[in-house]
Image 1 (cartoon, rainbow, N blue to C red):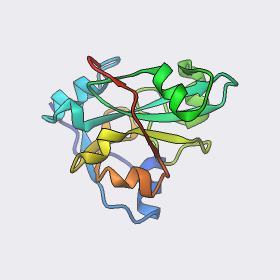
Image 2 (cartoon, rainbow, N blue to C red):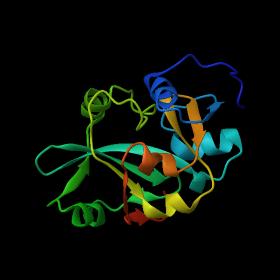
Image 3 (cartoon, rainbow, N blue to C red):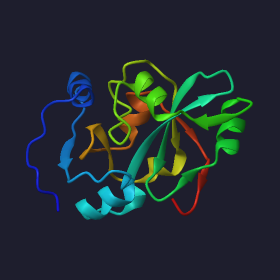
Image 4 (cartoon, helix red, strand yellow):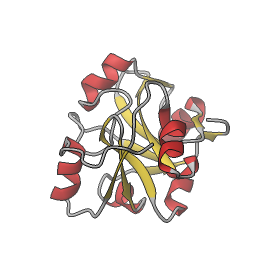
Length: 164
């Protein structure tokens, strides 16, 4: 299923290279609305180690990124409570694209158009390696999860809900 062998550079891969971050590229055949579960299946990975990048906003429409396991959902109430917001909700796709510079389905936390606070589900940091979007639909990068905290300044939170 993972047919493509070459993916041209994206803002995310350019950012990773500029930071000196080692990563592996993992192209796959993108399916609209397939999400992390599809990409995990296509690449033969556990969906728990495939991390999705979600663009959300607080009550004042300030954007933020949350990195979540592919097989989990975000409890927006728990996230809001932990980051000191009154509420958090997903951004509309066109708003998410405006903030990140990426098409929904290809959103990477690396090389975003606009600097945004980044939060990461704490249990992701216990994994040896993760796959996360590389800035294009149908392309993930394999990295050590600590890259998210060390290079992006991602703050650990606990807001996962089962059955993602």
